Amino acid sequence: MKIEKGFRALVAEAEAQVESLTPEQVDQKLHQTTVRLVDLRDIRELKREGRIPNSLHVPRGMLEFWIDPDSPYYRKEFEGAEEIVLYCNKGWRSALAALSLKSMGIEKVSHMRGGMEQWQLDIGRIEPPLVHKDS
Image (cartoon, rainbow, N blue to C red):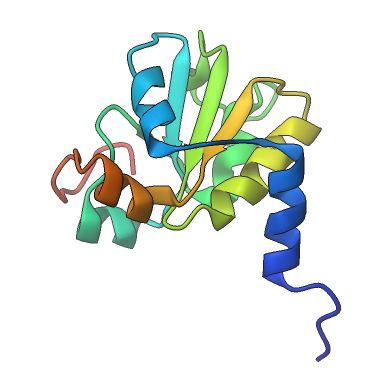
């Protein structure tokens, strides 16, 4: 199998088209009630590392289905959200997911550059690893 465009190129293309926020910028947005912070990481990552307080866990494969009100999988947690901020572990999945939401017509979507790894270095505030009821 030959890969003509690797994941790094895909992520770079996505980052050129979506807004990338620093952990500090994301931390400031957490105080806004119309901002929904979404954790795209796998449930095993949440159980191992915890998550940013007040974030909603959405498995990456379900994001587009959970956010679309016309989907049978729509989640009411997105009601009232005027802005979506996505994060993952390194910022790669979240960049690709932000581009996907942008292509769905969601204008106020961004992702956190550096992901959970950078958040832990810069901010450090996390909910401890637990089994979460929304996962």
